[in-house]
Image 1 (cartoon, one colour):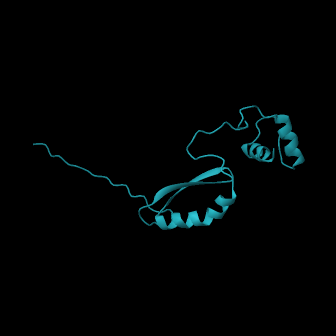
Image 2 (cartoon, rainbow, N blue to C red):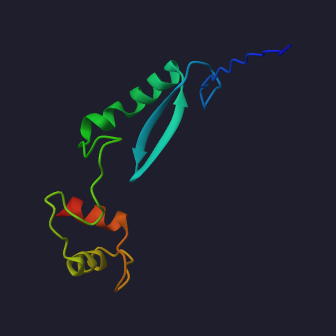
Image 3 (cartoon, rainbow, N blue to C red):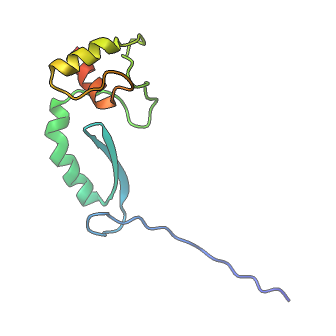
Length: 114
C-alpha cells in the first residue's frame, strides 16, 4: 500500500515597513537607482501621496520594465562627444578621469544640461 501525501504551500507577501498582510511590490527610483519594496494598501497610498508633488513637477523619462537605452548615448542614437563631457565635468567641478569609462551619473547630468 502506498501512502499519498499532499502538500499545499501558500506564499503571503507582507509589508516591509509594518508586517501587515496583502502587500504588493512597488518599484520607485531616486538618483538613478531603482528600489523595490513590498507595501500593503495603506503604506502604498502613503508613498503615493508623499511623492505625488514631485511626480507632478517632474519629467517622465521612461517606463519601468521597458527596454533601456545604452548608457552614454543620447536618445537620438548618436554618439556623445566624450571629450566634451569630460571638459564640461571639469568645468562643473566634478571629479572625472582623463580616460576610461564615464560614470552614468556624470553622463546623466551632462545630458540633462545639454
